[in-house]
Length: 350
Image (cartoon, rainbow, N blue to C red; front, side, top):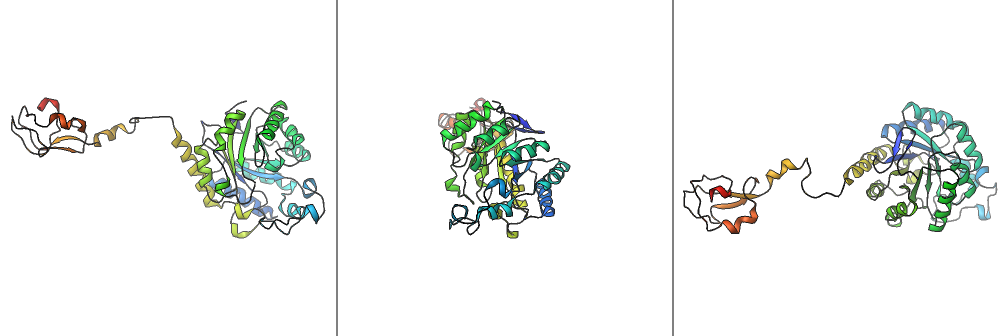
């Protein structure tokens, strides 16, 4: 299993800046024009890839509007909807995929999708997508995992709700079916998610356990959780994206706006750059600053034979004299020559 690989022209791995995915989902609000505007805004924000979701209401659920198929959870953004109506509202028409992908390519930005059944995989293969994403709710759909893995393309899987045993089965099936380039995304399947329910300390553990790259599918508000995830080893960051939350839409409430996405791109790269290596002492670029440390200086003009005291020796900046740790050793000793105020104290003048 490769820990560093390419999706299209972009590298994914700890030696490369975080791979940022803007998830459009249903934020196009059933307007292709708006969808293309989202593509443009994502590219302007500097993300690496735009992602869609490929399904229809009929490939997701049954055309039933009560009982198990009706959303009654009072905490759900989609309360009062049937699953079928929700997916009708949120889905991206399949005929839109090609123009959306083409618009992304015009910007030099990657584009791919999350398939929700095997027919969606066949369709996306006809568009030659560079990678696949599996959503949290489908990460135990072994038939879908096998189908996607068999394409041989990089596979990104959200881990929301999955136990270690379930993830182990999913990863084994993906690898045995042909997946060589795998990323597991820590994900909390609540919308929006709360930072205190995100548990990103799982990231390094998950990477060690499954010997693969890890990242985050972040449903929290703002960019703080994603930045922290990068500090813990996330190589991929996925965030839902819209033009303006005030415009509404099925996922708008937990989506970033363009200015926020641009900030995410910048701040996650800064977090990655800051990791560096285990390092003590002055770095190459710090060496010039060593001269600004404190050191021992003559603070009064002295004649040969005068005694060094706390009145005529001070620990001050800059750092061109003896280190301050020698102060106790030199007090009470005589100077060997005339010394003017402001002279760095050295062993030669004692």
